[in-house]
Length: 402
Image (cartoon, rainbow, N blue to C red; front, side, top):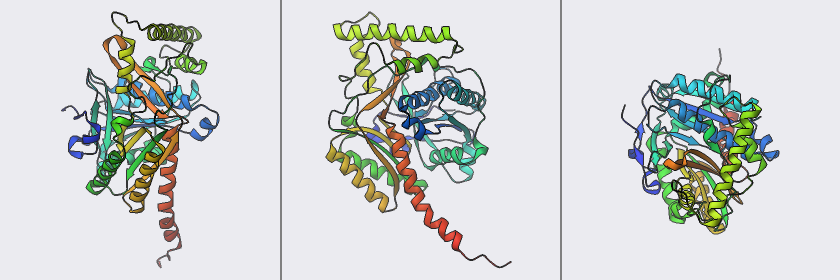
């Protein structure tokens, strides 16, 4: 099986279907999303939701990877999705079941998990295009185009046939997840979260997405709207927030006993103290440059991605946000897309750190207060308004005789 294509210039390549591989029927899509986000948001547990979503990426990646091959896996704020290579479905199934059990019993965050064969999507005329957004040295995120990935997410949410039953199991990779950095306030005015899906399947829908991406880039080049900037405004805190330490302690693959959790918390405190001290004194270690690490954090953040359509977290001015919202509204009124947006007063960061000294780390961002989730609520409401007239018409249609 050839490796997935690599994308390095998001603005130029991410909306071009020729830059992606069409997955065949031997692939699977792993889907996970937090349920009850409204309750969790109301309880102020936004970071818990992000932590669980990042844990899905970490565990799925570790479970289905073959050797050093990158895995097309994507963080979605309150969930994640991954392309599972042929022959790795049993490992993905076991990881998803274990994640569902851990999230509910340890994190008190209900997690719906499911596994959808790409073959079933293809049978419904739904294509899945996948690629890797590559940042070098084995650091990458998954990118997806096409109606298939959107449909897989909906199938798991709406049909129990595609869901998996949570059960205890190993959680490889879970120890690499942390969230010790302070939220980053916007430099230019506001943080805007954007979700766009095509209305039409196939080439027409992909063309609509490309048009929207170009229009957004015309308002503000997204590379310059990175919410973490060049890393200069990233602030490590010591001691880390108590809740961040507690989440990291619970995110342990070592059994979850009190000794294991205490060890995780103590380790987090020591690592955070060293990082803060190095940054404040402008020092480096032979195997670690904290300033370079902070710059690479910003470079390897997933503020631009595609999961059927664009998913963006942008630091923009109020005028730019209004222009983007207006162009999305126009495209939706023309029947080309569905979309959701949400503004936030900061960007939150959840980290997946494999080996800092080997430069293996990536970072997931979201608008504060679950910006992606709030944008998805708007998109779902738009879709519901579209389907309501059709449902009403069907309900009022005369029943054929006999």
